[in-house]
Image 1: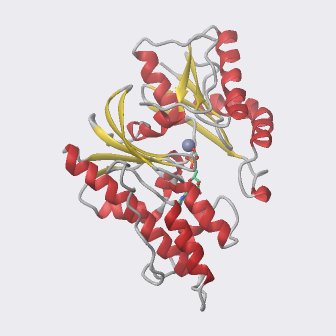
Image 2: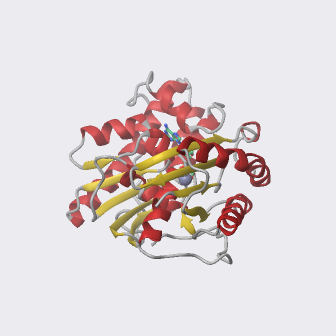
Image 3: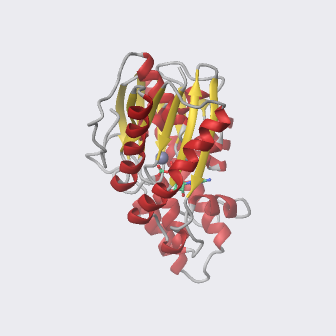
Length: 324
Ligand code: KG4
Ligand code: ZN
């Protein structure tokens, strides 16, 4: 079954065709209008999706060498509601026009199962750490649609923390890739930063990044001010330590050593290097499938469609929606 996937939950307009034999096309257009505002402006995102979605879908179909797919899947949430609505409505209209099945996909579930598109793919059960700009959560995945939230951030998402540190340093937006690049030339031990543990009352696998962000702000106010590269390297070491710590604890306690790490922050070089060198069996998609893309949406949609699920055209867009 060849499935067209559509992703418009944030600032990437993306379309992809996924079939039995794998990903046939994977087109991603990243909106640039937000950089001058230092973050995604929801209304601008929705308008830009409207402009780019038609050509993006056409490109994905052309690249896959098909005139029309056998089903259409689109992100139905969580995300910016106006942005989600554009892709979801477009997908419904295409499915109705082509008279093919339609299905709405949870964006976090799409990130979570993105490693299933790769070889080797993790087999169930596995742990999935989804680290993006809006979400940071650790799941236990038992099978399609069978997930348990083991832990999540109690304040900022990991990507949000990267973006805020970049903003403090005046490095522009999005901050993750810039901080990652600068960290390479810095000393990770130059600035002493905490590895915050969740407070009492929170779970053992929960994460917290706001204290780390505050510690970076305080370090920047000190004389002499540490170099940007040292701040980036020290922050990155602390953030990655926190993520790896919760993953390792969960792996130890559950006895599940297969871990999928996905979402924009999974593109981070330090996180990837640490996981590659660590003791867990890590499944990290290539960078372009860590950040927002539509292949991951088509992948999840296709799996549910093959299991017999179909969604009605009145399926609502959801700004928040836990996959578990
Ligand atoms: O998954 P994603 O593309 O969009 C959301 O669903 O949020 O994640 C975007 C987030 C941003 O916060 C961005 O700064 C972060 O991922 N990010 C990174 C890196 N590349 C993107 N964070 C750390 N290191 C990177 N190399
Ligand atoms: Zn995402």
